[in-house]
Length: 109
Image (cartoon, rainbow, N blue to C red):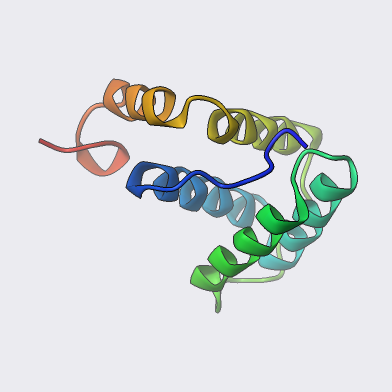
């Protein structure tokens, strides 16, 4: 799998939450769950990672679950998140967050 374990740490948790929020907003909790199962089936994610991500989805309990389905662009964005989480997360994710600046969309001083 591209991602066989979720990295630990606050920044990695933020990236996971951002990714899942993106998927839920584009579709629904149900479609996000189905996408994670699909990503496991095509060997993007390890089964243990999917289990961990499903735990994160509990954060979105009560979200509108009537959205549409995910598009190829959404799956491409997911692969970007997976690659980011699978890479040198400590440096790559931190640099991305710093590039976004402060405010609600990035790290604050």
